[in-house]
Image (cartoon, rainbow, N blue to C red; front, side, top):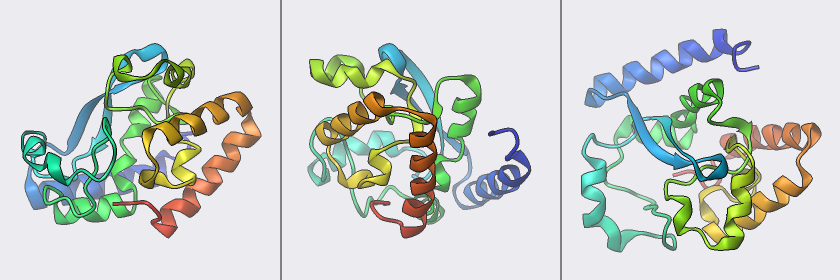
Length: 186
């Protein structure tokens, strides 16, 4: 499915990469360790939407975090570049995760992989690690970044317990609507 969409995706991919290079140089991608199936860590690809030293600046902005630990999100994050703001609002920053789908680290639909390791999870959270994580999932279409981790875990478990081709297709369709409505996007 991903390969069939390549003629449409590749030109958009290239435009995003060039825009990042023009505005703030290299690197084009932001690679972050994420937690996947069975708690295994992998490198997840995203387009870089922040200044190159954003991770170093994070500790200085900890008091601005709007979500409960271990999540971290700032609505008007000063580290985000102009093109980065557009990429985030349009969800184009997520496009490189299709590389993770092709390598088998991710699927199109499933629980969203966390940046924090499985050893920070409560025991009941670990059920979400029983399936391959997804580029999109139930919580992306039910609140996106406005939902805390416990509620996302509940939705992920609901997804796992009801997983089917039809359910995945419905979530993919709702993802398109969520992207265009920009609900919960930063």
